[in-house]
Length: 73
Image (cartoon, rainbow, N blue to C red; front, side, top):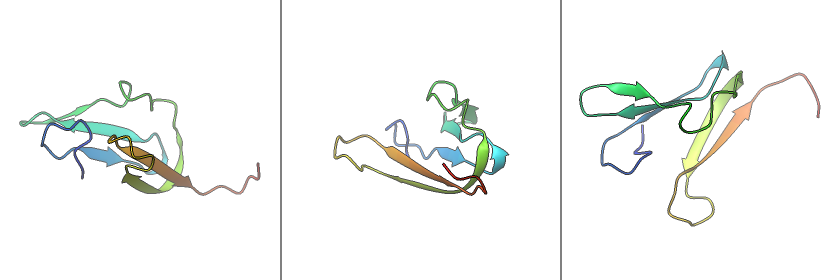
């Protein structure tokens, strides 16, 4: 859990096997799916790890997702 939208409420990022990376924003009374708003609707994959942090020092959250695949690029 982390505060994705900087409103001082902890939000959720969810991933799994053959699921898109999902963003669930905490409204205070429930979590709302905002995956589309964050541009992640086409991220279906076999995700096994997510890391978050300000990687480019611009004071916004950056995500790195790791997937397992038998295919080579």
